[in-house]
Length: 316
Length: 233
Image (cartoon, rainbow over all chains, first blue to last red; front, side, top):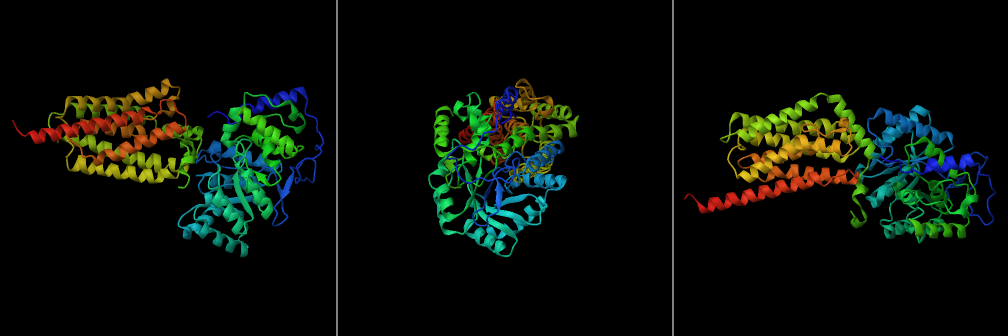
């Protein structure tokens, strides 16, 4: 399969060769929110309900970690996780829907001894909801963690039944945060109603440089309600980057410290003040490092973000 | 499923084409050199079915027994043991394949109700061609389109050639109940959808051939009905 980011290495190499990547200060009027404790650590945003800080870039596992029993691919995924944690990442997201991904994550955590450091985000995806606890326990065993940090109702499946059970787990200390997920703009009206009516800690939704539907209502509502946001599909499973790969980066983003469309697209997502964390998925160590590096750069202000969105709309 | 129109075929693909290709490659490597033997066995089965002169000979029963075994093997060894690791739907498909394997044993090998021999020549030729394509054409086409031999999909080991060959054998049978066509047709449709989602070239071929087999079977059914209504001369 072709790489989802075929142009990334080229851009990176060119940038390094020309040594035109100065560390620039955060521009005036930059989007508020991200903070960093050290120069090399990825910047973070806090979870509104708790004040706990999360790195802006996490790791998704849809498709990329579903490699079954392929020993070589499993080690490659473990390498990706190792590089992810080494670069300061913590949030890893999966679902029982993702085939062998949970098992592969568990392998990566065991190999890297990282079960204590990961922010383990998983989902419940089963109907009837009475099977939810068994599914969650099976998922936990596959991950090899003591408990999940975040459990989300996957794609709102049986959410009326699952959410009370998840809130009970939270009250009993068996999970730290509770959320819901959607993707690709589906069921946003119902999603919004749940955000208004339920004491959610997290929502997970699709937000990308091209798919900005969440900006209309969900992201503002998340800020208003103090709900943390995980942005999935920031590269639209590679489609976005494939549509942009032949286009040059706009010259006016030079001070954003982005040398590829992947970095630019990710920076656009995590620079939205309502987004707590984005979870790009990858099978490549160089890509995971490149993704994490986005969480260290300066931040575009809102007019600059609008300008980039308009520019991309004309291209993609 | 709400907002179903927002889903694309690719939305249901939960593994990468590279992962799938690797799985097929390892499966083939573990079973080598079974592949050429199975193609040869398929050729022998085709010769038995084509040359049969009367319904229900022992060789005809062997064809269905071997086909049933092929479905059982593909269901168990490929879908349940391997593909299910990256595709939860394969677990269901594996059991359905097993059920059809048993049905072919029962209907063809035990009851002997699927004898080869008589039948409209055009339908028999269509059946012959479809089996031949399933045995030889599909692996060759894959190679021509750039798929490594190590990833070849071979009759008796993988879904598409097994399902397609079964449709061909059902056309070669003197008569075959419509329900026996259902699972092979669905399998070919699923295989085409999977290939299309993975952007495999000529993904339409297997579903198109399955559609042709269904059309030939329907035509044969109508011809038989007309013959029955006309009665003996």
